[in-house]
Image (tube, rainbow, N blue to C red; front, top):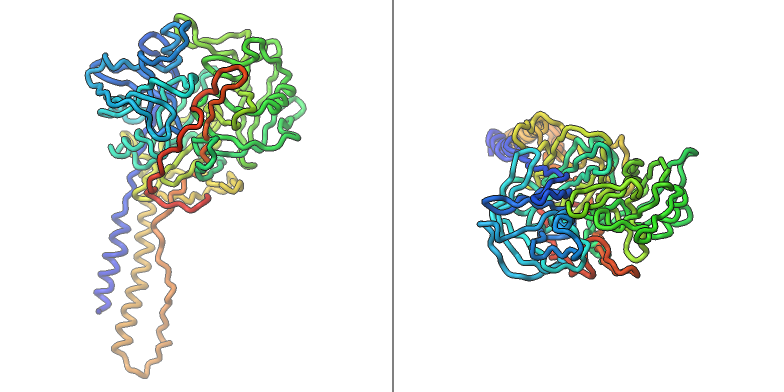
Length: 549
């Protein structure tokens, strides 16, 4: 075989695939904010407009556990009899009426594997509000209309985002996204002014995290107390005071907590941990409902306005690595409630709310309000999740898409965006607890134009080495036998530049099953049911990932 032929073969198999490699990340972002419903009621969450000819406005909350998507209907509002229709609509985030939709098709009534609710399975047209592409239409998307649940306090409809999520699969199959991943920023509705949140499907919003510290871990669904599959260690709780900071956990030890972004509070901790916090803040529980809020920030702690003079911040440390600060305005605020006969969301100045649930009978939790100061990223293709610090001030959105098929991460392909104009960074992955803001080299690769150029240069260099080797071999076969082989040595270990990179964006912790125990007060824990069946088996991931980040 001539050296010319070797040159041709090397070009065909090495250079051409490298030059033809593409990165086509696609992601969409849905706002998480307050919406006005048809009854003039208000609800905060993700907008779902359902049916035709006049779409019905629903508001959903993201569920890290559910595979399917569930709504409440006018038939199954399941609200107390004394509540007005407006209050019930707000509490449920809207109530779907299939009789008003010409495109609604009802299926069978049954319970899906892994979910705790009976539902009438229905298909209808869905319209999503998107921050990047305008409205997104999903034709005949299937969802469950709840007619029974293990828990009254599952307030809004829930958008299932588990590993086999039908919603995520619909977006992926429709080329709206390029990976089975999602990210969440809760925003803040109690600050002045409020700050809208967002949920990014198929990637994450780099502008919210930039080069921030983070922790990552794999999902672990072996703990029945945490069906979401995300378990972290709360290794530090401290409250700032005029004299510095005081350690809440002194003498108490760390807490294993389940990350449940769908619950409308900051933390759930054992009573003794709350008592330590209350002592430092010098607050007094309100007499109403034994100091627990109802309906809106359900089961959180309410205190008297006179005692709520604490002005410091709460610092939460996870896995001895990531420190997240909850500012005072998100730690103590006016009690929020749903106004009777109107359904609007209002506040009371004479009662203060601290969004912490005190319970000894369930696993500690990290709720949705935690992600007002942090950012959650989930990559089901890698079976991992990441929690990162978020920036305290609003910034312009910068979507990063994860392209699982091409094993790359880059600026998402959206209307009005130039994917080649951005060189995004990826947050440090640290399951071992050694994250550093100075260590920002991502293990995830982005196949940008510069990368492809570098690949080409590297492969060309390798090609010349191969061509030279082929030429020397040819000369060996045609030179005199008296010539020593050592005169033209070959390097058998000449490296070929690697052009594929592992997309290790997020690592996951153990799934935390949410339990809905009845306590002595005989009302249920917010969200999730009792002893739910195990979730359906995980499909084979498109990309392999090493155990541990």
